[in-house]
Image 1 (cartoon, one colour):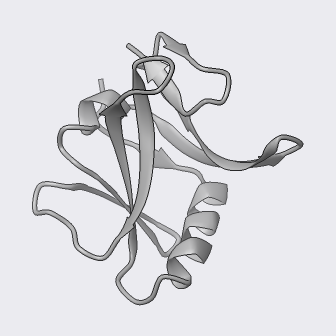
Image 2 (cartoon, rainbow, N blue to C red; image 1 turned 90 degrees about the horizontal axis):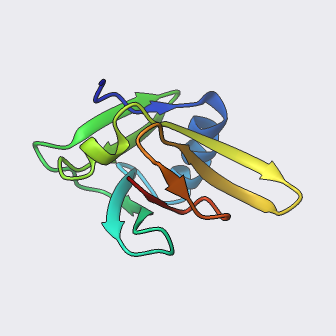
Length: 109
């Protein structure tokens, strides 16, 4: 299994827009924490510092960080940005998840 996390072009464009308003050096951190209706949930934070052992994904001017504890949960995932009838949000397509909730923000393995 690959430790790679992919950011789609749509997601990179939206992340870039968000980070631009946060000032120079802003990066998006994606992490996995316990909780949510399915056991784990995705968390998105804007940060200006990165740890030495972070996974760094750069695409189209957007920088995304993933901490080492979250990498195994996100390995092989694709982060996309969708804007549909129920709203605009980031969606993580995670091949490791055996189940997820209807809103797509929590999952189980």
